[in-house]
Amino acid sequence: MIPFPSRTLPHIDLSLSDSVMQPFEHLLDFKTFSSLRRMVVHQQSKPLIRRTDFMKQVTLYLPEVAARIEESDFGIVHLEVGAMRLATREAILGHDFATVRKHLFLVADLFDRADAELYEAICISWLEALFLEECSLAFMEARSMLSRPLENTLRQSELRLEKQRGESK
Image (tube, rainbow, N blue to C red; front, side, top):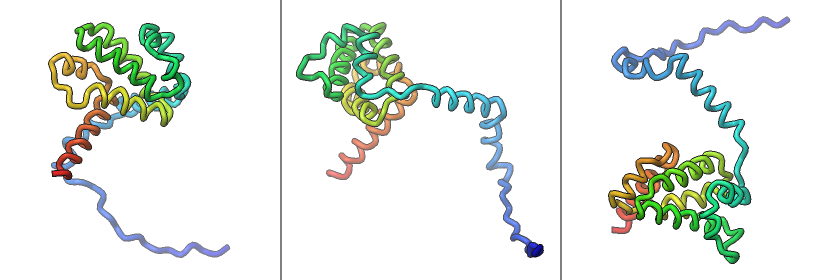
């Protein structure tokens, strides 16, 4: 047996000063860790929603929206999601926030489990098309009901738009 060479590794001080650590000490305790672990397991157990499943979900939970889909739009996910956007927009403008909540709940669930194609369609043809540059009181109220992932995605879109405008000037 060949002996393992004995080398001492250089000492690296990984400790942070107390002033740096104090704000972060409370962020990850075991309870928070356990909660995060449960969320990850739950998320992994959710089935992935594909573009083709979108209309099934809309038909089951929002048949009034499914009725808006025309034959020529069927099968084109951005147009299907666009029909959802129009229905949500009408509900917002009509101050029908019970319907808005139903739409937001379904979209949030789909968004969390969407495949790449449906995720993109929701981002562009529903979220951005519905909320970007809308600042009326009704739209602000509807926006306050967005799930955190949808709100974060909308903020990123707004920042991207702002940056593009800044570069074009």
